[in-house]
Image 1 (cartoon, rainbow, N blue to C red):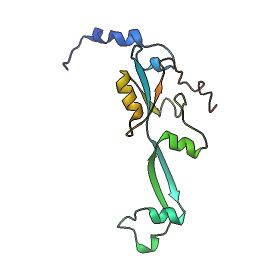
Image 2 (image 1 turned 120 degrees about the vertical axis):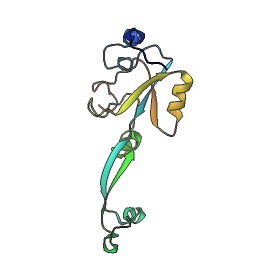
Image 3 (image 1 turned 45 degrees about the vertical axis):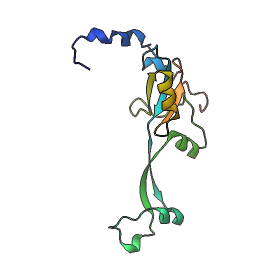
Image 4 (image 1 turned 90 degrees about the vertical axis):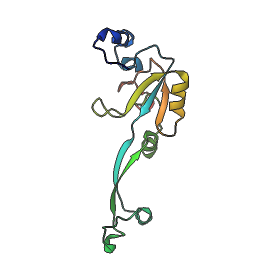
Length: 143
């Protein structure tokens, strides 16, 4: 890759990006396939169940008398796990978060690349269509 100050090379992005809250409002139209890659959900909680506490590692600096005490913990959950904890299911057009704390990244690419992303165990991703609406008003499954 070489540096260039010729901004006209990026004109195709503006020409293919649609106005609105659809997938192609963020990623240019024209890719064979698109995916929505969900960011991990930071979850913090206090473990009070004795079995949970017993299964947690004890920091070496923690005194023995506090070994069984409730513990504050932080984890990274998938959105599917968070949805399950809330008694619902995750789907491609669900909107979670806001413009400030974006919940996902949209990507476009070849069918092979996007299929690989969607199947990957390393990330949580769902295939989306270019015209899928991701606005707050588009989630008709969870309301």
